[in-house]
Structure formats: C-alpha cells, structure tokens
Length: 337
Image 1: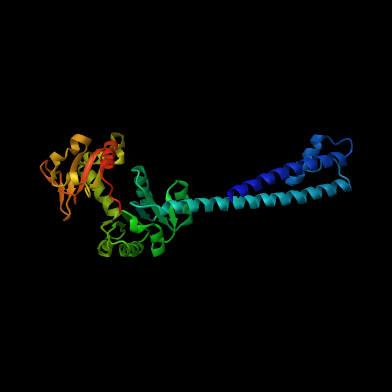
Image 2 (image 1 turned 60 degrees about the horizontal axis):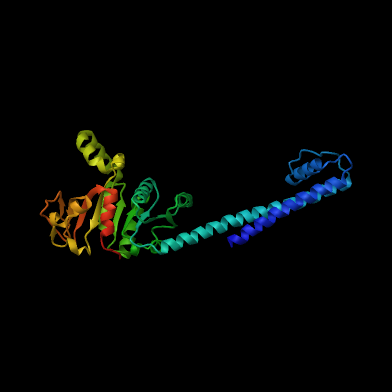
C-alpha cells in the first residue's frame, strides 16, 4: 500500500513537470516576439501558484483562457498531491500501528505502566535505561504520539478495561505500575489487574494517604505516595546528609560510578540451593555483593553473613557494576512464565 502511494506521488510530480513545460510552451507561442522563455516560465509558475504578481506582458483573450486552464489543472494537481500526502500519513501511521501491535503480541516477562504522567514518564525512562522490556497504556492521544515518537511501545486505550489489559498481555507480565491521575482510577485498575493475574507484582501510586490501605486491600503489593516518599527523602537528606550521600551512590546522581542495585530471584538456580553465600562464589566469580535476602516467608535479611544459606525460593539483593551484574544475570537459567 505504501509503495502504491509513493508511485502515485511520483506520477503527480511528473504531472506538474509536464504542466509547467506545456504552460511555458503555451505562453511562449501565444505571446508575441516580446515573450522570452524565461518570461513564459515565470508566467506559468505565478499562474499555477496563484500568487497574483501580475502579468509579465499584456495578455490577449487566448492568453487569458490559457491562464484559466493552467489554474484549473494546477489546482486539480495540488488537490491530488494533498490527498496523496494525507493517504501516505494515514497509511504510514497504520503500518507502524500494526508493527507495534505485532511487537506487543510477542511480549512476555515485561512490565506495564498504566498512565504516562510525570511519574509514569520517570518510570519509563528508568526501565529504558536498564534495558527492561515494557509498554505503556495511555488514553490521551497526544501523549501516545509523544511516547511512540520516542520508540516506546504504547497502547492507546483505557487501562480500566479488561480488553486493554489483555492486549497489554498482563497475564505474561512481570509487574505493573499503576500511576493514573486519581486514586479512584488506580484502585479500580488494581482490582481489575489482580482479578486477571493474581500473582503479578503490582505497584500503585497513591495521592491521598488514607487511600493507601484501600489499595493494599485491592491487591497492590506496594503503594507509593510520592509526596510522602519525597518528604521522607528530603528529611533524611536534611538530617543525615552523610548517610544519604552513601546511600545515593547507586542513584542516577552518581551514575558515573556505574553501580547498580538489583533484585534477582534464585528460582531454578539449583547450584545455589542450600549453599552458603561464601560457598556460592558469587562475589569471587562476578565481583558483585549480596547486600540483602528476601526469604519465601517475606523475612528480609539485610547485610547477611557469609555463612547465610541460600535457597532457590530466595530473592537476593545485589550491588555491583552494571556490566558485571548483567554477566551474572545472563548466566542464570530462564525463569519464563
């Protein structure tokens, strides 16, 4: 279809070249000896473009009729060109939409961001920087165009509808961030997603502190109040600046150190089952450090001792350089759904 549109545009270009050539020849032969080829070409161009600069030389009746014919054919050609450009725009948009739908249909082990406000945009940028697969659900068409112009996968739809969530392959996703404008929307989407995929990890935004418990009861694994979290962080920076600087070593502020913190499931990692941290050789082999363990029971062990025993149901918190962290993750067995 797009190839046909390009062929049509070529034909229109040829049409205008012929029209200018015929128009120039017409004025040259209709006019008297005072008409040069340049005068004829100039008259043809201003006639077709309808700029109205006036006649180069006085036109007789035949010359006026010739000008009218050029204007009619010129306007017809411009109309055809505009229609072709519009068709090309629509077909190109449909082509990329189909390509995006195809890419989305293959997604698994990905993340979903419901809403592309200020928080959604930050989450998307962070996931993109980490090389994670994700897509965004947004019902504002202008925002959708911005998202797609950045090369991000996006569904133009309402996150509160089951069909939209199914198209986003919520059943194959690793996690969802629900960051819509209101707590009511976030609550409804949280309930809907947990009905579709009860085991998915769901993070929800909360604007009003009293709605936090409602979102947790609806199925959210974690609820973030950006004002509360931001205020807490600022208070820590104000009262404990040295401690805060030490913690921030893994934040974008110190990205030049190339350190990252990541959580990794040991599911299917039999070589680390019932093995102590020391015997696992993770630090020696990959130069990354285990700084925390989340047990299957939900118990968290911060800064575990070297004789702490690992289990395949554990989630370990690692800190290290990003390339070495990726090397370790690449070595782990697949944990696909």
